[in-house]
Length: 287
Image (tube, rainbow, N blue to C red; front, side, top):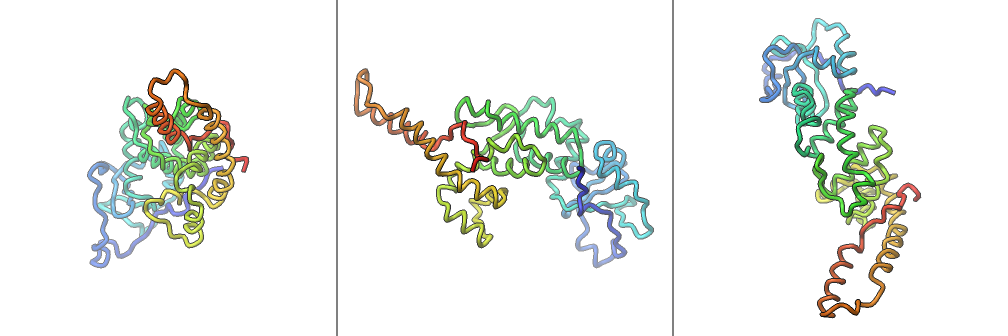
């Protein structure tokens, strides 16, 4: 069911251009300010001059918005009607540039896309019902966060998308937002085995007082249900990991080893690296 962005609206401003409003006049965006544009979008303190027809072509939300007849007191900037949005200027710039550049951010560029840019495109494409951009962004995210990718070993950057461990938390949030539930088993497993959950009291303190340290700010992407699901799943994940660990390293040093001390050191380093690896057959939803 389509979701109408509650904070997308045309505003009237009888004082626009007065001395009181001049202090907060937006600045033209250096990248998206088209002289022949007929609509101005303002995000934060940045103004984007664009074409109503382009937005209407791609976005159902903007198409519906522009059917509303303008009022006599409608806010304008350089003769163009103004639409104020609650999005960040960076996010709005990303989605507008993608529309005007022929979706080259996500399709046909041949380059690895930055995860933060793709996440911004997915958020706004979902909000403004830009179907093609939404599907393109989900395709890249699903290519990285897939069982098949993880099965080849430790998750690293994909040719289509950059990777940081904390990105998984944001993907959980995006999966909930967009209804892409097929992403959740992988990204919840990655989130639940993140180092922050090695200290559950820290997580609970963050949730109880709503003060999350900057180095753990990514945990804000999880709902309370997700957090408690991770805390509940940790013992089962650890048990399964230890079973794999025991099967792999439970035997004695092989007789073919020519230097026992060196072999023991190598085994010890391997034990350290794989102790907290997650078995792929664990279902994070089972908790």
